[in-house]
Image 1: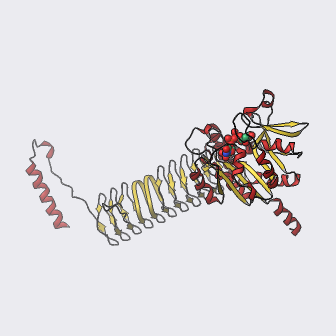
Image 2 (image 1 turned 90 degrees about the vertical axis):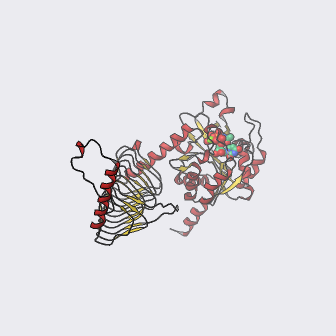
Image 3 (image 1 turned 180 degrees about the vertical axis):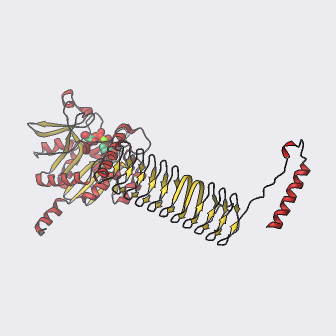
Length: 485
Ligand code: UD1
Ligand code: MG
């Protein structure tokens, strides 16, 4: 690319941003600050910040107020700085709190409650603004239901003012071109207009929207940049939050389908933005796939699974109703139905985890199997080992510490076995079903740790068995076991 063109690009993309996020969001009727309400898994405000960072903004100043500390926790790790607006006296006052005197060049002002905006939209608007050579432009949209949005009032097609719905006449309310709450303005001009704002309106607030009429009065031509309805979509109520959330999920599944993922029912599939899924993988309805998850190619994910920060390799079969948090599953494994795999669990290649199996911090090696009703916690299960139905690793001791169970490869664990950790089982060992294993078992050994069966012939026809008789039988059975053992 020629040097001159590169230089122009870097100049056009040079801009600072002020995001307004101090409002309470009264219409949300929720104790959570509005901008922290999640849209498809991410706090609303973090979506704007991600988009701004991707679009290449110089710096992001977020005006905070309600829930200041909570909002700071979300925005500061993303590289934005917080500016406190102690009293919410209106959007114009909010911008003043962001100390615009220390800014230079183009400033983008936007609301923190427009979560559908993407980096591409911002880049486009910045370029258009720079090309227009105006000092101020408002980003507008044409919508079917203008509702509570500020109306764009024109005279001979020239923008004259923004009138808030609450202050608008019957005729003004009919205008369907609305203010998105996004403005592009030269810093110097912004600092000239802000001190002139007054609060003589129905809300007794300093409206940022009034900078338009002030600019017009100062003899400036104010530009308008038309954007799409989704950029204009602001969230002020729970219903609008749900609409935004639905939109983001639909946008994600559409992108995945375009890349070859089979999604049987896009309306009922919930996949967060950063999730990666390989082509040829089939996603059944009702799946909830959260941030940090990566699924390989040619997998089958049956209905109603929940996954968070989960890595799934190629050709894995996940049967319905599974719950995974921070786990890794290798290729060709089969999991579920109804399996719960918890943090730190690794499932090897070709391994099988069946119904009602829970695992936590388990290294379940290649080809191992736990087909039914089992709890494995803090354990290593060797290759090709078979864990019988009802097995439990007793990892949590009375000292409130966790202990490890290590089971070698090719071990056969009979059903209804308990391993009292810490414990080690050697390769190829056999554990008799119903055992409670408290001592290490060497490789190749058989371990039986259960009481012996007692048979009393013709018992049904005896009218009474005395307590003494039962004790006598148990005693003789125990001494027989000791001799045999
Ligand atoms: C605002 C605009 C309206 C526009 C709409 C787009 C004004 C007066 N009105 O209305 O023209 O159509 O956005 O969504 O600007 N905030 C503060 N401090 C305050 C007040 C608000 O930081 O003192 C923040 C809020 O947290 C919010 C944003 O500014 O993120 C917009 O405030 P909100 O009350 O939602 O304004 P709208 O009524 O939506
Ligand atoms: Mg709003």
